[in-house]
Length: 200
Image 1 (cartoon, rainbow, N blue to C red):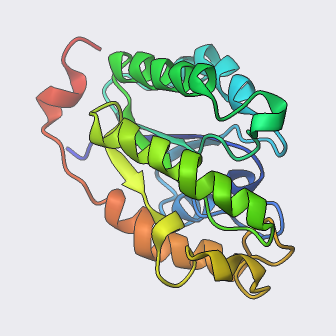
Image 2 (image 1 turned 135 degrees about the vertical axis):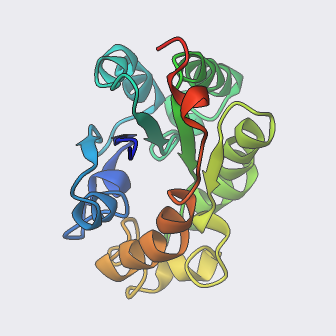
């Protein structure tokens, strides 16, 4: 019997699909209609907003299903707003660890470039390395590494309006690219049923 898949997404405007018709993760739902799907992302939110949804996310977990949590952190966190510091990073690591203990398969999504050079400095020095370290340290299962993609992830792409339409948000073409090259391969993983359902 096929095991059901349950996807919950959490993030801000990119994951919500601002400046596009369907975000990279919404496209998964549209192409896999049997999947249970909830996208809780809201534009403009910071790391504390994402973490505050933890209980609501766990309430959406489906017993016996492949439960996949897609999280894109740090989109609106800047040093000037008390983000991208040790407190911010520690809080997000702890959130991911708790979600892991709640038996979610966790996918972290890193940040695409923007037209603003200062933002690209933040993402290259703080955002994306921290996201990668959470994955490599075993806190999360997969990394959607489109922020280092040679086509859409280099700093120059942030000023290419065919990729980042308004200098901040990816275009529909970019979401389509991210879905085909990252979401689809990640979601092709296979896990043994007993590993998914034991103790749930």
